[in-house]
Image 1 (cartoon, rainbow, N blue to C red):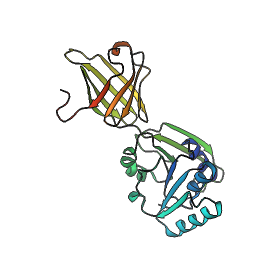
Image 2: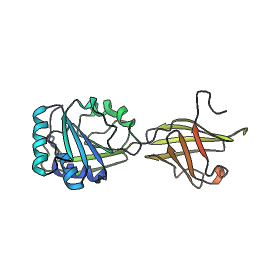
Image 3: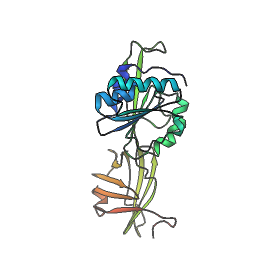
Image 4: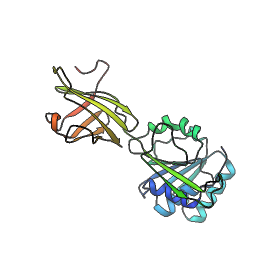
Length: 250
């Protein structure tokens, strides 16, 4: 992949869209001259790691971090981004080609729920962003259209499958940050409720078209904790659903 500088206003927009704070660890994949990690450290107080396959760019990034006074919070490493451990990241930033984004997508989806992913210009196919916006970039180095689009994804909890509780079950079909669910009671001929919704990090909210007044669940490891259930599902408040084993619920 060629090194193309991310303009300063785009760098700032990416970090602001991700809501970077001093509590975050930012990993920039293909970090180039280091400006994203350095800006995250200097402007927001975050810690960060930039990975870049070109040694001269890593050396330059390390020098820039010293000049900026953030060498204690901004590290850079010569490394293939596909070999980088992302597990410590709260925020991952990218300015990569579309096919590289798609190759990375399974690893990004496997990160902890709530991890924020920000990409400059390129999306991730049918995993639609949670937010996108376009800004003017007069000094953009490529293309005739002097604008950039910044995309944000929040990694959703992985909740696809069957979940069990005393007297009932919840069958969830997930597609990225959207889901459909069927709530059933033991012995009942028909489902108690079928509803759709969205997943925001580890919280599942019923969609506005649901017939239930309110449905909210929180993913906690191998459990789904009901925090709000009303309407037809009112007999399930406060329940905890446990992910089904190989034999299902029973």
